[in-house]
Amino acid sequence: MSQMPQLSACPSCEEPLESGDLFCGACGFDLSAVPPRPAASPNGSAGPAGPTATDGESARWPVAPDVDSSDTPVPPHLPTDLAGTDSAGGELSGAAATAAGSASGSAEGPDTPAAEPDEYPLPAPAPGTAAPADPRTETPDPTPAAGTELCVACRSGRVDPDGYCENCGHAQPRERDHVEQELAAVAAVSDRGLRHHRNEDAFAISEAALPDGSSAVVAIVCDGVSSATRPDEASLAASRAADASLLAALERGSHPQQAMHDAILAAADAVNALAAEPAAAREHSPHQNAPACTLVGAVVAGGLLVVGWVGDSRAYWVPDDRGGPTVRLTEDDSWAAQMVAAGLMNEAEAYADERAHAITGWLGADAYELEPHTASFKPDRAGVVVVCTDGLWNYAEAVDEMADAVPADAADRPLHSAQVLVGHALDGGGHDNVTVAVVPFPFVPQGAGSA
Image (cartoon, rainbow, N blue to C red; front, side):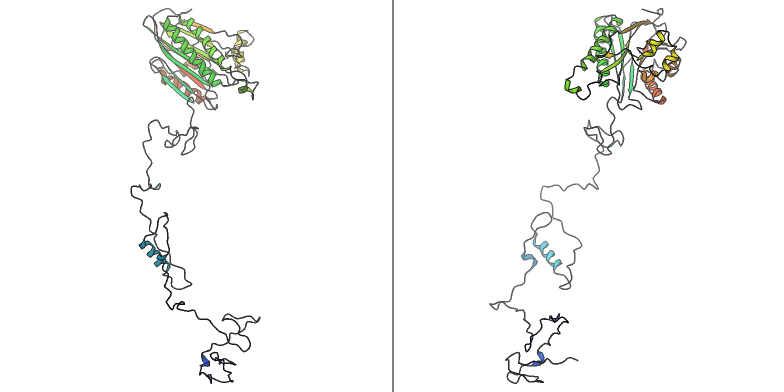
C-alpha cells in the first residue's frame, strides 16, 4: 500500500505544511499529485527513479516543452529532408528516399531496430551503357581467335608467353620436343625422349634439282653433345648449314660425295661460330666446353647413295625384300670403335664398357683435327636408308635388330616408318633424344659396289 509523501512545504506556493495535510491551506494544491520520494540506493546514491531529494526538498522533474520560444510547434524531421546517395553514387529519387524513410520509421518502438527491406532497388544503368556480363552465366567463346595457341593438356586454356596454360597451369612442350617432316621422297621424326628435359637433336631434309633434270634427296641428322654448352643450338646450326651447302653444291652439278665433304666442313664452321661469344657470357662457367654435335647425312641421287659423318650417329641400309643383308654404312668415332679397330677388344666387349660411347670425333671449336668421313654405294636392289642418332641404335644396335625394327613398307611410307622407329626407342626406355630420317632408295639396275 502506497503512502502519502511527507512534505514540509507546498511545492506550489512554499506555504509551510503540517503532517497529514492533503491540500495546501494557502493555494489548495493537491499534495497527492507530488511523486513519492525515490528510494535511496544502499550506497546512498540516487536510485533509478531519479535524483535523491535533499532534506526538506522534494524532487522536481523537468517536463520537455512542446513548443519553442515563439510558441510555434517544432516541425517534425522527415527522412526525405536529408540528402542521400544510392550504392552507385547517384542521388536518391523522391520515391526511393520515401521508401527508405518508411523502412527506417516502421519500427515497433524506440528500442526496436528498423526492419530490413526484402529487396534493395538497384539504379538503372546510364543511357547508352551496356550492362556488364554475368560471369556465372557467360559462355566462353568456343572458337578462339586465329593463331591462338591452346593448352595441350586441357585443350581450352590459352598459353601465355612463358609457355604455361592460363587455365590449368600446365607447362607446354617446347617446339623441338617432337618434330615431324615429310617430303615426297624422304621423312624424318625427332623426339625429346623420356628422360631428357629438352631435345638436343636436329635434322634437315630436302630435295634438290640436278643439272640433268633429275632430283636428289638429302637427309642430315645431328646430335648435340650434352657435356658441351648449348648442344641444341649446335645441332640445329650444323643441320641447317650442311643442308644449305649440299643443296647449293648439288644444283651446281658437284659430285654428291664431294658435296657431302664440303657440307660437313660448312657445318663445322657454323658450330665453331657459336663459340665466339662475349667473355661475360662464360663468366659463371669458365670451364664449360664450346658448343658441339655429331653429324650424319645421306644423299640419294642418280642411283648413287652417298653418306658422310663425324661422331657416332649412324646410317643403315635396309633392303625392301630383306633378301640381301642389312648393312651399317658408317663407323663410329668412339672409344669402342677404336678398341675394335685396334684389335684390343671384340665388339661385344667394347660396347659393354662404360667408355664405349665416349666420342673421339665431333663438330665444335674444342674438336681435334676435323676428318669428315664420306662413302658412296650403288645398291643392287631397292631399299631404305635409315639415318639416325644413337637414341635409336642403342635399342637396335645389331643390323638384324635394325632390320626387324624397320617396317616392311618403309619405302612406301617413310614417315610412318620413322614414327615406328622412334616409338621403338621410346618403348625400349627412351633414355636419349631420338631422331630418325628414312630415305627410300629406288631400284636402279646397275651392279652393286662402292666408290
